[in-house]
Amino acid sequence: MAFKDLSLMSDRNKNVVLFYPHIPKSALNSLKRTLSTRWIGQGPMVDKFENKLSKDFSNNLPVISTGSGTDALHLSYLLANIKKDDEVIAPVFTCTATNIPLLYIGAKIKFADLDKKTMNISVSSVKKLITRKTKAIICVHYGGLPCDLKELQELADKFKIPLIEDAAHALGAEYNSKKIGSISDFTIFSFQAIKHITTGDGGALCIKNKNLLEKAKRLRWFGIDRKKKQLGIWENDIKEIGYKYQLSDLGATLGYESLLEFKKIFKHRQNIYQIYLNELQKNQNIICVHEESKIKKHAAWFFTILTDKKDFLQKKLRYKGIETNQVHFRNDKYSIFKKFVKNSKFPNMDYVEDKYLVLPIHTKMSLKDAVRVAKEINKIL
Image (cartoon, rainbow, N blue to C red; front, side):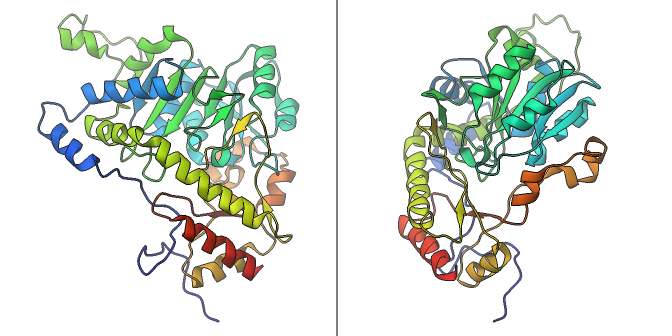
């Protein structure tokens, strides 16, 4: 049987594509209203969006929106006072957006292995890496499953360093009945096109220390106190290097409309996730990357399986009109990170590297589509 290439699949002809942006029906009229106002850049809709994020996900802690999740990560590292040559523990398995901003700063990355059962950062690996030179720990909630935050926070507290959560996958997730976004020193979200909600592209940073909010706002806008400038009382001096990391009112409008229906979005994704779990965990040829936990609520951005026949399965599903893929990759193999991995070993990463495959979850899928995907996998394997 001949297979076509694995480039992006068309979303026509009953195909089930891997990702699809969620755009609320109400967004078009709201965008028209925003376009008819004075503000299309950063304005009142950004404030409104940030306030709702803070209320819904951050227990009313300060939240600032950004042009991307990567922007938010960079700001969190700056606010955490990470400097050139500082050692930072970060996951070897993640989107490069987690680690590239550390290169902007010139920090020294110490890559931690993953836990092969969850594909989150391995606490035991972090314990082996942490020293008095460590200035921060960064964790990523892979697929929307919270990391072992209690254990990571205990390490951070012991060494008196910040814990930074990359929650790009985890909007709506919870740990010990607390929303992700309300727990650690810094938490970032991503609103890139294919996340739970989108602002076109964008992100947000949740900050536990309220005293850092004004600095965060300055760093987001060239180092300028934007409010004072608009009021005509700014002293016309820049004392710290800032960036152009703000969100626009157009993006915030789209994001706000999505927040209004987030419960529906979240429930639908959870339902698809549960269908996959129910149907696939019976298959002895597959391992579902999942953790049964009373203290963790999964955000259901990814559903990932492990199989020794990953390539075979992916091609067979492609032939059936079902798109799957590996989305994130180990960072230690990229040339830009080579200087940080000399003599390092990542046995768990080695184990899963050629086995993991991500299945579709999005609001353009029906629950029948999810059943179809699961049944096709069970037929093939």
